[in-house]
Image (cartoon, rainbow, N blue to C red; front, side):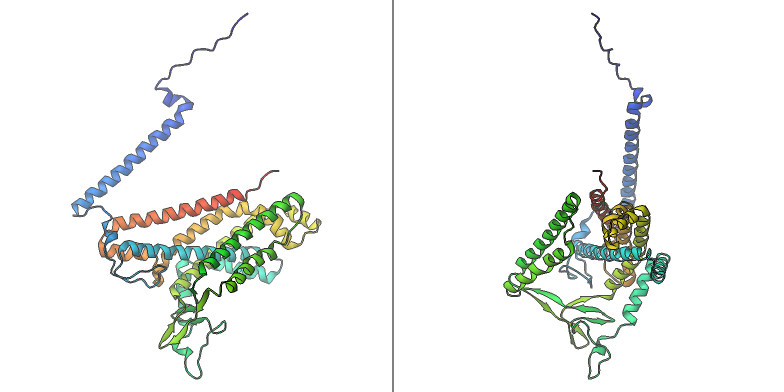
Length: 405
């Protein structure tokens, strides 16, 4: 009986790194990595040598020095005696605040405008077309300046709210004042038991998420549609309201009041923040509207006709049939719009909003002369922020991806 023996394994030769397809790609990657690292090392070494010739060293010790300047918009405690690192942190939080609020408002505006632009109502669709084309084709900076000018020139002064016949009045039951110095709104005052109330509210949000997930799973398995909207609305309000009174009203409001030449109390939203937020949201929302419109048009009309034939109402058809399929087209360009909005927030310096570009990348650099270190830290912040946004959105994109049964 004949026996089969395996041929002896071929000995590895250095020439295989170039001519053997099994190793060639790895060789190219290693060589490219070495060249890139050599280039980075050369640039870094050349930069250090040039700094030494100018009498400078490369270090980040300036972050521990006294800042010596004020920041008008801040989310944490800060004074001119704080360090440059603290000032940079205030600027970072201000940037993240505008980016977060802007992404939310831009998404809402974009989805509404994108859907309405496909409306069969001629006036509605044309108005949305004017909004999209108008905002997309004018630079962001101009919109920021326009909104800021409107906020400062077309709104009353605080002194117009006083007198026997005031020219201006507060709105929302005299709780909100819109002035040329900003908008004054009530501020929460946290008392004993406020933490419990916050935990109840967070638990309500978790309950809403769990119920919506259960409702979606049950619908896919049985076809039964649960009243998601009303249950979510009840979970959002009822537990918090009940515990608010059970705990003896642990949260109260500090209302703005006119005192002297300006309003005191409450929370002061400066015109620079509002102008930057609204302008970035309206500008980015126009691009998101086109993403939404293209995503909806990418879904075959037969899907809509089939849904109508089954008796689904238009809103159910949009939520259950059209949007789930359109999201795979909408999400990838939507990520880019979120990144653009975050980076465009660096235009805040035009209206005096103290973001990270104004603090770390502006005043701190001018005072310390550490332009290289400051710009490296500024670039690192935008890089990390962009990667985090991209990562989170990619995770969401994977979660809503159409799955075969």
